Length: 623
Image 1: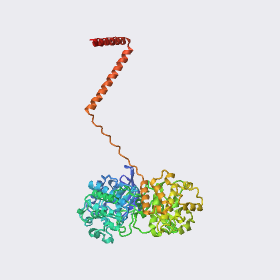
Image 2: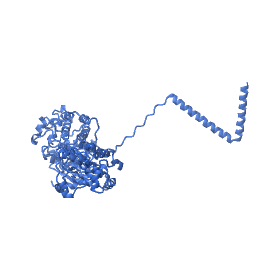
Image 3: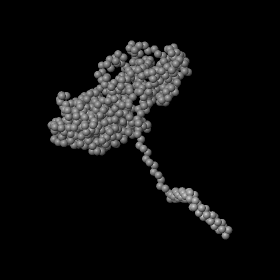
Image 4: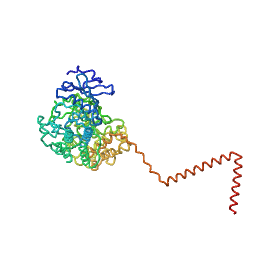
């Protein structure tokens, strides 16, 4: 079907663009004058629909109408089922996001956040009597805010779908219920934890493996996982529906408990990390319909995520610092980091057809750490993720390469999604000129008084990173003012060799700087190597914690309920009444005196009456 066949209108909807064309489904972006917003239309010819089975058109209408009653933040909204001539369609919310990637390992806390959101959305649908029956990454959208959205509720399944995500009873054509969605969620959770399918192997035998093969425990593939996650995945992936979780909320509660135990009772961030979001945002992708998805390469091939042809549009993650640490943070199991030479890296960037789109998504960022050093101070939330990526790149080098290269801001290179690599000094010198500033040289490399330390330890590099981060956060002008006596390389060498001279704490120069960041840099810039923070993983953990705190979230609190006043006691009521009576008598008396004082006749009569009253009292007292 050619693009020229795009209609101008279907029902009330004005067609704006074609998102995908397949042999069965057509996906359009349209405008609804009634809703005053863009929608996505999933369209199918009535004769194609009726050709699958008797009553399929009625089933399509019924499922779409039922899904229109679902209203949950984790579900793409279905507006209505409609017909126009020979076409039937479902109008749904048009949203921004990226299709969840298959077999992609994320940090444990992100895996828990994503599966928890998915299970809460499914629990809501199940409670309303609706089963999705096709939960797989192609029907899960990740929004720029890290929200999972389930799409294609109310759209009938024409075909078998992705067999590696279907429950055994679905593959056998047996009666199904909500527990088939539980099985699909188990597969997705397993992939998020391990980066691998629970049923690996040739695509032509995947259905047989799902029905009969037992998955390996997730902890066999990811040693950092506790055995609690093995038990959870085993129950979710049980071959018999009766042995699985009966409800999505039970699955969710077990996942939360296991994550809390793994974190030693420390509540982790409820947000999906920047790394996971940007890894999806930056992954090479193309629109596809469900029918196109069924023809894609099997899970055994290299995993690929595609932007969904259902109502999505790539968008930049709002209020997320850039650049961010990308896939390196998601794949701790990878060994080493082979830094490309600068010419090769530049050629790769120039040849990438997606570079302009990625820069539009993520914002153009400097290609080296030196690019972050500006005249004015740089806000921590803007650069903290570049610091994280830099430390990750240094960790990836391994202890054997700790002393192989000197560190300078110019040879810490960032790709378009913010991943850092450490280029060789030679390659950087060839393209960017000499690197000869001694301001990043650790004292033990200069001073005879300083202890040499273990050459395989990263202490000199940690000192260099501390100075780089310090300079970037202060900005050139304040940095030069703080080191006003260091005008030449010789003066820098003398300052570095003097173990008693130290840089001022960052907090004293930048009051708005987080105290944790100031203390960390002070420990990294300690001139005595034996006192310096020497654990790169500890530094990385602290930087990530600071990065999480930089993602501020405004929480609107509910007003506190009005405090209930206690019922008054009889004694308190009587006391209050007596006070009111005395006050009333006093007011009446004052008014009477004022009235009598103003009338002379009444004044004389009152004085006469008062005199007689006094005389009568005296007479009684004598008697």
